[in-house]
Length: 177
Image 1 (cartoon, rainbow, N blue to C red):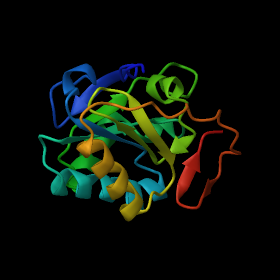
Image 2: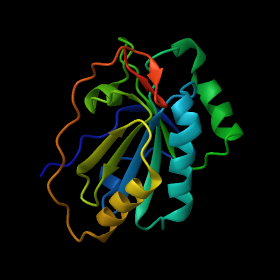
Image 3: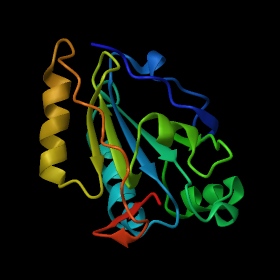
Image 4: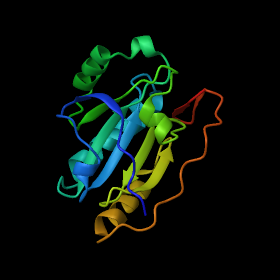
């Protein structure tokens, strides 16, 4: 069972820099989003905020990951800072490092298909779940409680399939082109 690779980020909001390694011992929830993604604004970020508020910080750490793969000029750090303030997001938010090809480095590393995407890491730092699009609250709550209750990490789930989407926003998610 392998620990997940670190997030590759260019900066942080609401926090000093964090690593997955230093968060071992906690279940880590990473909500990958874009400011201009309707599903992120209506579902993904509010859900991440609820997790941040409801679960004990000793057990669960929520991280946002701003992964911009479209509309790069409109989704700058300054715009993100205003967005975070306006939506009152107070959990740590990482800015996915651009790679010059349009797909940011962490998004490519974890083969995220688009936004919103949710990554769940167990207490040992192993990626256990990866979701694309809206995740029902009850399902996510059950997954979180199972990970919180584990004494040691179990077998990691398989990696996500390669992106094959056509780039349109449907069903509350915006896919990579």
